[in-house]
Image 1 (cartoon, rainbow, N blue to C red):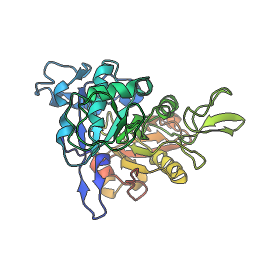
Image 2 (tube, one colour):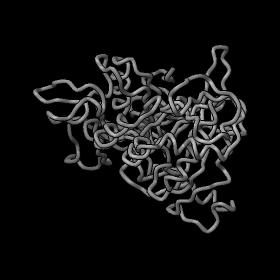
Image 3 (cartoon, one colour):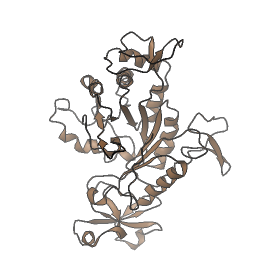
Image 4 (cartoon, rainbow, N blue to C red):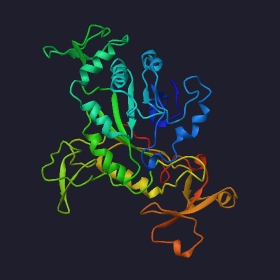
Length: 373
């Protein structure tokens, strides 16, 4: 946690080859599980490592807490960086009050030097919060309690003038941040087709400078090109522009004909012990890579996870008694140990647990670290 993090997709790569590390900012900690992606939550797994800290003592992972003392952290980080908001929580958990969210977004509005990466599994709460009437004004009012240290691109609330404003915003709510906040990129976690169908329509209805999806852990085959069918009376404000496929109306999340849609897709396999880390078939990631390439959407592959295809294993790995194998079906992601002939189905692929470091960050022999502009 803090002003440096090892999370690779928060890093900024410069043309001279240097890399600026990203940061994490945790004004909220704790969470409760929601869907299949949460089953082996890394935060819950590592929660015991935090309980020596005063803010975590006597708390369970499911005890959601808001930390007032952490709100001003990004204001103290002068160097521009990409900040992952709430790496140990879900910012839009029901136990986080709207008033606290106003203060979180107020701080983000006061930090134009940073890019904030917001990620949630609760797309419905995020969409409702950011779409609510008066939200921009509430965020501006909440920002009054914090000192601004950078020139702000705020505008007159009465709409009569629009120009850059310097200094701090401690003059009431006559000044409003540009909306949606230009430096806030909102995203959802969606590692299954079910989660994509549920969360992406809500994400695309959410006011934001950029929309993104984190497909980590990726648990099965996912098609991002078309969402669920749309009714005849549903307009294109949900998701992207609808089109006809197979006689049904669908919404684009990716596609060259799409006037708006996802700005970034991050994919990764699950990490953890062999009894918990679920295998990610590389074909699932390659299919998403190809969908993004066709649509011109930046694709970021974070890691393979803990598993590799059996055919890609080295002799040392094959002969290592610590290497564990299973069979994964490329179509539905179901696994079995291969001990019964009756268990085999079309699409079953042998995969080996070799550990995260050995599995690596390559997909089909190369790295994909594309970032949105």
